[in-house]
Image (tube, rainbow, N blue to C red; front, side, top):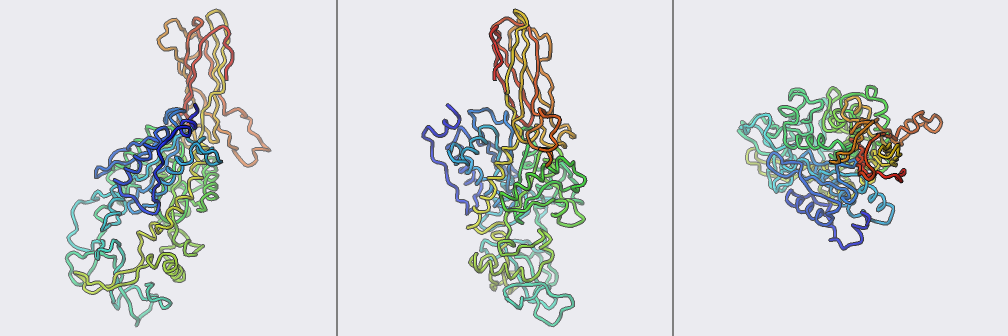
Length: 588
């Protein structure tokens, strides 16, 4: 019975249907994932990468058809989300893909055939929430929106002065406070007084306001207000080994590379699963796909790798509607700063392909078609703010920008609280748009995974050289688009081996290997992807570089059972059994 029949010809429990308009807390997500695994045990296994700083499971989903082999014997694609605490839509993207794969496996339409081919031949590893502690804090009844991990860093002492950012009025949101002040930096927008805009250079004589994050003031001296940084100052995405720098150079990096349990768990998993050839990490927000690298320009990258990354990036843009940009050239927080994180570690250390997706663009939603990513936040025209305000009124029930309301602050006295709800409408889409954003990505992820190298057995050949002497040929090929090594950088880093051939006869003492070795090192197999746009006009001389053969000569009695195996780190493994007999012929 085929693997597809295993899933479709028997009565299986109905798949759970997640509510993609809401964000799941940790225990709810665990129960949901357990229900998925129980509904499709032949396709999904639920495990754990490890435990977070506060002891929560970091859930790991393994998706592949168990009827066609083990997950580690197949090329693999990885996707994770929610490494940053309040970027919760990232976990929605992973849950959506999980549901999509299980829902379509075994289907007879085009998507069903694609997903069936995918899970029969590849492995998908999904980590819906790499940072469960930070997400739980963001989803609390009185939330806090820290950057990432909840571990106090770089110091453990609680603040004794300054302003602690928190939900001071208990409405479940963290907004802004405005206080009338002739020295204030903001004023009401003449076109709509709800909107606060910067005071012009040299401007005086108007009504001005001091803008302060919503929060509680410690040790108020009646004059100065300093906003405290979060006690939890770690950024898990700066804790990866590649490009790690000290706190003085990279804020939130942690005391040493992979010091944090969440990062260490992911690093350990990747190192123990060399079958992972491509990966995506989901974040929010900007509505853009970020491609390598963050530490060097395109001119300094290996050209063949850059061409490959750009080719798949263009597919991503076409399928998702998100533009793709270089981190180095177009997505720096500051022109003099270098950003490192997951993407640099996966490509720089491991040579696997990697992208970061910044989901959701409120700017674009409001009709702002030309915005320079993160640089927009430094400076943009007031017309953009007015467009966003209209979007809030017309599509978000006036909740993306909250009207100012009086509040009697325990230390500051009378203030007003309002402004942009960054958590629910900026960092994440409003509930009605979350599923739409997550639905952009399954097609791209599936095409990436189906492009991974895939080792296949072409044939075995046995020739009798005498009554007990045999020549054996074992022929395999890479059926995937990408080469078995994935990238030239992986070869340069020596993180992938060439093809490994093995011959085994268990404990049969009468077998003698006359030529060849029990384990032979073979070549790195190319894929069927064209190396350049002129491939049809200038074909490669290596027209069979996707194939390899290993030969042995053995002395063994007729009837001896041999096992032949081949493995490539990122292309999977194949094996076959061969019984020696005088009438043995080539087999496919």
